[in-house]
Image 1 (cartoon, rainbow, N blue to C red):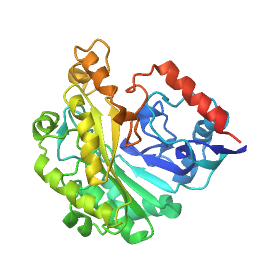
Image 2 (image 1 turned 45 degrees about the horizontal axis):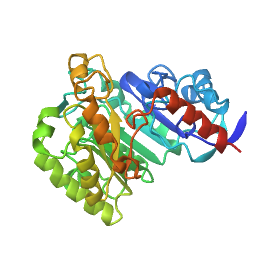
Image 3 (image 1 turned 180 degrees about the vertical axis):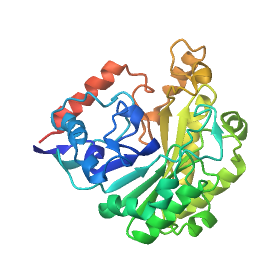
Length: 337
């Protein structure tokens, strides 16, 4: 089955290696934790065009989105591609299985999922040579700090050496996103994007949310990344912001700060995890019963959130989930050819 669609490209062009070797095509909370398989149990070729992968792609081809959490998604679905059930190996790989981190965010995991990466370390060249033969972009990390973890640093170096054509996209807390580290890893001239998760515009708020952080160092590194973007050595520069009751009043200033740095903003909805249940209700400003909810709604009326200077899901734009889903289906109905 083959269709020419303007559609979300991830199921057809991207693979995500997540915790304990599970393979996804999108962030698990956004895709109903739908795993295609596990790299320690099957070959990547078997996983990528296996029955589970075909089933997941079929929902896009048939316009039946039973696995995607549409109300959470902020991805651009306007790119036109040939949508087939079986596809070549991915152009994009997302490595987000290494949870080692140098900070602890209040809304994130209260503890890291320990895993034995010794097998991956010992067989790294064999594992990545099979998976990355068509890759153009590698993304790290999303669950830890790739610039801090010895395993992820080794992975970055080996990919850079074995596949010199690959460009890198880093998701970082910004503490180690400096010139020295990027040069040491051999990727300072191979950067497609850097996303820094800062979540605040001032140190007091940052310190409430990020334990063991270094606000001043991050701000200094943001200036370096801004110059990298300005000189054409960084294509995309993004500042992420998980919206909570601690920081929502800084959302407008965050967009303005990003604009000065030449960055765009990604506002993310707080997700409930097993390890943040003790603070979730306190932080979840999107809960209509939260004592500060009405104040949050007033801030969300600022036109800056609809100006194209940031990405934000419709839930945070005060649209109901039903409206979001109806809007999503109408878009797909209208853009197919």
